Image (cartoon, rainbow, N blue to C red):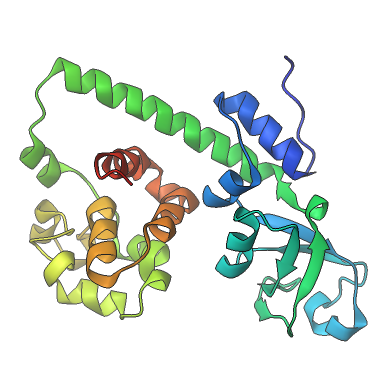
Length: 246
């Protein structure tokens, strides 16, 4: 079967069909959203929301990213409800109640997002295969690997996880205590270097955020699928979730 060519903005059916061809597994709207892919809806200019459109007097494609709106879609809603979006200048905007309603067939997914996600899934699959081959070839020194393994820096930690917690994550990282310190997610080898060279194991950190600060696992899962600098850790995250039965 020939691979379909994606349009710039693909319908849900086109996105699911294209990803199914590239991954060999079925896709649904719920799976697209749970994978961190952002749906869009075209909004025609509305004078009542002039500030939302700015100079785009013909309309623009508005992203649907607010958790309440996306989870409603993933749960199987019969239409689209947008209560929060970004204006034409990409500034987050809370819409006046009850928000905008649109038909499900108006949802669109960006070609670049779908291609990027397919590439990420391919890398993850290849990494899992390589990890399994390596595990069969030589015994794993778990403790040694943990200490030598690289991590992500402070800026990346904040980009991926700061919005998920109510605490001042930057201050907690600097304090170096508990799950953020030497006995937790901070890579021990990096603590011997300059402060700006310290790195954190994102998988260990995410598990700590779930356990200590009750950050929901779906939110953490979305973080691993939304940031390219976490791609290298995605296979370990999925494996850990599988071991935990999540």
